[in-house]
Length: 172
Image 1 (tube, rainbow, N blue to C red):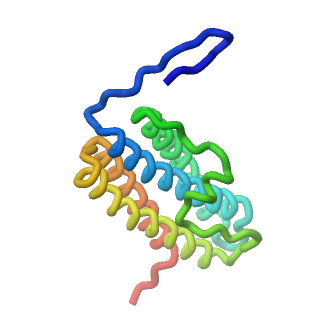
Image 2: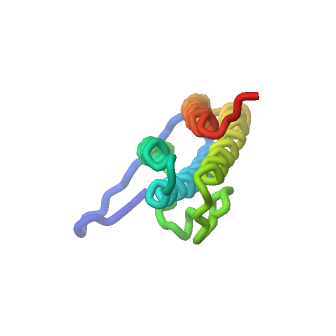
């Protein structure tokens, strides 16, 4: 790749990671979708953090913050993983909304239980996508590194969903 910086032409070598160009693009595509999904969930967590009211304000305000801070780190790691493979990273809100599988809900401020249910649904949607992406990264794209990385992210989302579900779970 050739670029011009401060009037000087520089060449960035294409990574030679043992992946074909098609496999690299396939992995980058699924990572870009994941990046978009993480952004939508991040913004929903921020929205709910800012707008939570009622008796559960304190613990939910803190839990939502804990989760969006964790997602902020994951978002950066996902983008860096895409760059490690070589492709550019989508970096605009327009691109995120085009790539995401999660639905935006502008103006929707549900009660605390409904907020939690929505967040659990988002985490679970990401988990289901990650299960498929773990398999595809390994079996279809021959990228065990990304498969391993995605397995770790899936486990993080499983824990986040469990922590949220615990707030609305009822004893039988």
